Image (tube, rainbow over all chains, first blue to last red; front, side, top):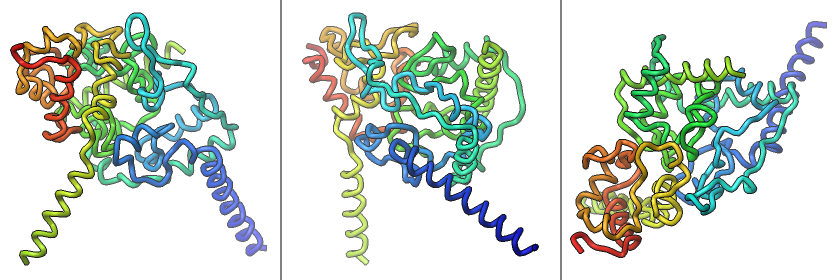
Length: 227
Length: 116
């Protein structure tokens, strides 16, 4: 009897892992890099159709992955590489929305399975271990003053649904979807994660990195309250 | 020993050469988001900016900036030349050689030289 239970459990575990791998390979691998390394040339970076997921376990919040995969909403207003999705317009460059594709929608069960599998991908524990985010608070006004006016984050990122730039991912749900240490690490040195990213390294100090993560938490709470 | 050193130096040179991107590709990746597909300062990010990005096709304005100033602005950001912080430092993404090439690319876009 015991042997049967063990055998069934093993079978279940291996079937689940197999199913997850099946979905990852069938539905994800065409657009997402699941194995690494990150793009090493601009042409490789331009060819990306979605963010690399090979360090998903270092980057995302699992509960957000499960939820988002069932109801995906655009995070990068101008697509993965903005250069493929812009056109000249009367007032300047515009996003060519006809070129943007929606993300596939997963069932609740598949989303949970895929998210669990993605969270195992952690090749950058070393970078994450260098960050420690202490709890703290910052007012939205102070955050906006320091980070949007002084650091210029809003030049490339939307900080609320109708305000900011378009070439980077929106920031108003960043703290819902990303781990705090990942946010700090990526801002500290974007090229350590993605050598060819068009996010600059602005040499943000440790103190300001803490404040910045707290600011993203404020933005995300506000977004969640508005929904 | 000397052979080993020579080999290492050659390897380093070839890796560096391999990693170097063209100025046109770097411009398309890092600059177009704000300075626009045509370099006219009208990229997709400008809608809510407090200061508009430089129009790289403006020969009059661009001829007022020396190559050294342009190099410094790209490498260290707008604040390094007392201009907007919205122009970030690209030192972490581009080598000095790539920045030099970008300065020359800007001279092609403006069809101008410093002081002309």
